[in-house]
Image (cartoon, rainbow, N blue to C red; front, top):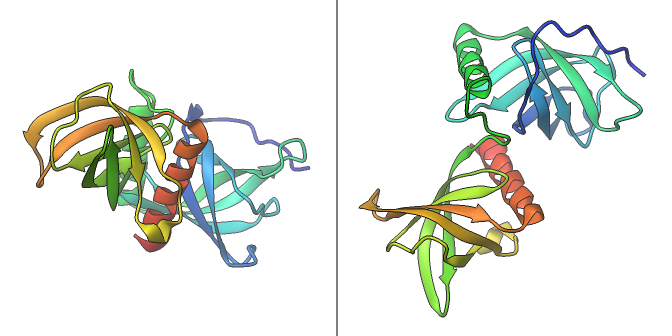
Length: 215
């Protein structure tokens, strides 16, 4: 088991998708999610774990920007399989600035437990008793979605949101939290709260894969 390094920078809890690339992985890349982040590194959970001392290239979805960094594994733990502690070794000034902005927000008065992922994904929203609205998701997180629909749906309405057939993902049940009647890019904005935790995680993972691997 690797030794945990002394912590110099404060850790901020955040679930954020990160793609790791390197020869240490059988497929040369894997997708993981952070448990916490700091100025000097992050704690990652991933299906494939590298050995302590291994280096990798990280692609991090910080929100509206994808930041890149070279990093080294400083610790792993047999008590927590799948977790790795990374320390950044190289990051460009622009990426360091984006990372710093993310940390400043997470260290502020209204931090997020899960990062919002900007995507553009067509969806069908089923509104009881029998209305079907074609719309699109502009961003998503573990617990919610920002959806544009052709007409306003009142808050507290429960809806079912289905993605395109090629995603092979079951519809997710959600509740409209807020609606902006003014139209935005051809539709009305809606903030939806996902009612099933596991479905929310699936949506978050799908969004991360879409943005990280193909974005």
